[in-house]
Image (tube, rainbow, N blue to C red):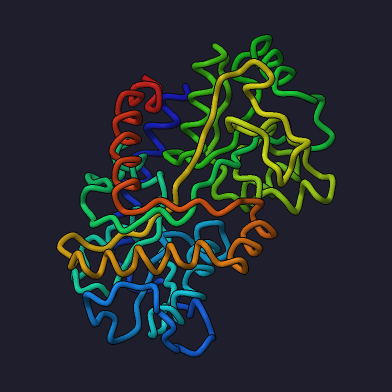
Length: 342
């Protein structure tokens, strides 16, 4: 039944992207910073006189989410470093496919860029798009998020990851696992099923904020998201965190055990990357890579992402980011039958 649900959802997504592309120019456009565009780019390459006008970064999701937050935080500081306004435009639709398609088809003049993450690759695997990261000129990985947690409502009987796994073994398909079908959290759920031999009722409950609302209302049993996405509900005591899918505990929330500590060898991460349309001048890519690296090393940037999303700065340069996504798409493709529920 999960296979039928997933295939129907995939057909819906494919239809949605066709409809969304027609109206993709209607995405909301907002400035990433109100700071004056003064140039203090002493550490930035001078191989090109780019930029000569404002730069647009497309976030392929609605405003207010984690991808939007990270893009806007970078834009805030990039405006000063590059000497031109850097604005963020939200182009929502089809799990990021609408916005990424718009950037892919844009002119490679260095004034339109995409800020996305691993879900671009998942879109290719499930057939929502026919392209992956290789259709772009990758610039860098601005954020490496290893904070994926599994949480339940505070009133839930599950106190540990093992509690949930054992309950799922007793009642296959009963426990609802919320995700965005075709998104990275869906993949994490598939891996958890494969690792433990359980069967979850994986439901499409929308984006992070929608899934939080569903868990708060007890319409779902569990939810996986980056820690920062659920942080307000954790702080308020509404959600209980069962584990973090990382190699080690975080210094920012040291009381949360890893899945590995509990006997389940599963780790997950997502890299938020910046990319330009294919054919962009390599000097532009180098200059932007250097500028974003400079932002990632700023104390004020570090303080902001720690406070808002419980993350520490981790930057990947152009080559490291390319290598990461080359390996990731190979892994996703090898798990295609698992992801598709075949």
